[in-house]
Image 1 (cartoon, rainbow, N blue to C red):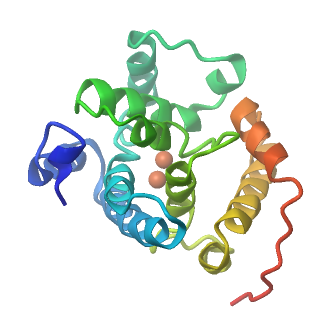
Image 2 (image 1 turned 30 degrees about the vertical axis):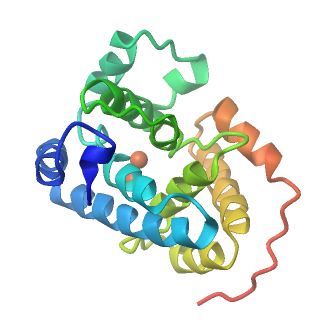
Image 3 (image 1 turned 180 degrees about the vertical axis):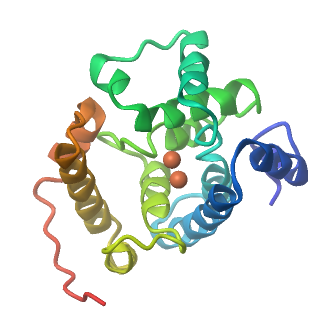
Length: 202
Ligand SMILES: [Fe+2]
Ligand SMILES: [Fe+2]
């Protein structure tokens, strides 16, 4: 992969940075998301090279402590709303986008947004944002109960995959007592009329 098209590091150096910031499991996840993102990008009309790069770096801040994620966000002058402050699971995405821009020199706004919104989603996502959101939920090593179904559904129809994914995430947040936040709410609202017509469950 020609990572220097998107950031200031060549592929091997970028991969060393990733490995130094996350455990082996998350590194393998990052490679799987990159691979899955290429497949979905080709299928649904996003730029496969951007998708591969964004998939590779999407969790670049997930392996560091929460307080560090928060300070990356604060140092960038970003003020989090109340719901996001209560949802540490979202911080690594926001910090990740900041890290990509400031430390890796990523300038592509679509790539930065794909990283920024890969956990919460948001209303009016670009195709690349949708691809990374679903590649993350359906990467090869994912084995939550509905993973295989969600993967097949996403291969059948990207928007049905998103509708299914965001409803599941919203339910899970509710069960665990976390706020959905305005971005997930907006995605949920945008997709509320998307019917799931794909029946196959494996
Ligand atoms: Fe993530
Ligand atoms: Fe991820």
